[in-house]
Length: 355
Image (tube, rainbow, N blue to C red; front, side, top):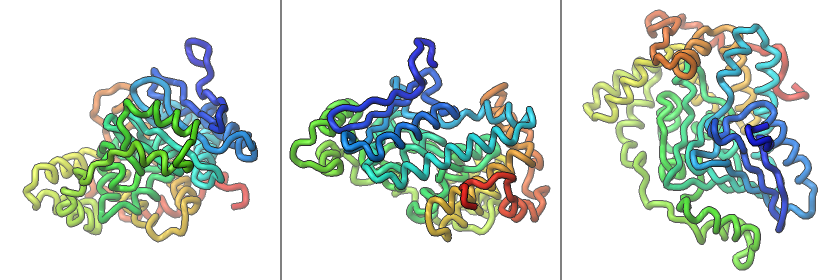
């Protein structure tokens, strides 16, 4: 429960809409296992409910839809030697991501404000994904020595050019227009019109379909900032390895490219090497479920074998000294076999029951 004894997920129905609100505003609606289960339970109830025609997903408070998963809790589980708890969380979260993607009724997600990590796993797989001028989207997992998950590598693998590698490796935060351009969202709607849009979805006069209604509110700009940066991004992030990417970024002479190089030089070599391969392998996989299975193996490998994950969480979110001590600290010291070991890791528990 929240401080005011409200549930952390509000689920209600009316006028043909099942309305889900993440209700943990002080934590920017960060997901815990209970919230994931509550969301899944509501979707299960509404799947065959003839009184629910569509689902609306949003977040309480003014700061954002969802800041991600509970990574502090993840660090505690790893330190406490509780791999079964880690597996339980990711299995439930990934099942929810797949459920959203495959849901038979339209899911309209309002990714207003901060929508990162686990928030992308909710909104990014919805039927209609709406962002605003306040939206801040990212898959920032490499910042904590980790790798993008929740189907994020599936979404980024299908971004134009090499934007997927750029966003996955740097963890860059993008706005609404860029989110539409790269394929993380479908429409930009001004934040002050979201309430009117929700009302329109409930009344559903002409035009009748959710997509047609959203188009009445759409104000997506003609060109996104990332579209203008494609020349240096596509060239640099097509390189075979992260050190080669950094070298190309340095050679470009562009300030933004230099900033990207500096960011990569500060991050975990292990996390970056695995993430680059994850995005590229995701392009070859047939569907979201296959990518989620790949991601599950990787996150359990990180949790079971890699000190960088706990160290990254400590440096960024617990002590906040922003000085992680990566192991290894450089690409020169990274064992060439590490990436193959990561993708060859078999978790004790499979992701899907029929695996």
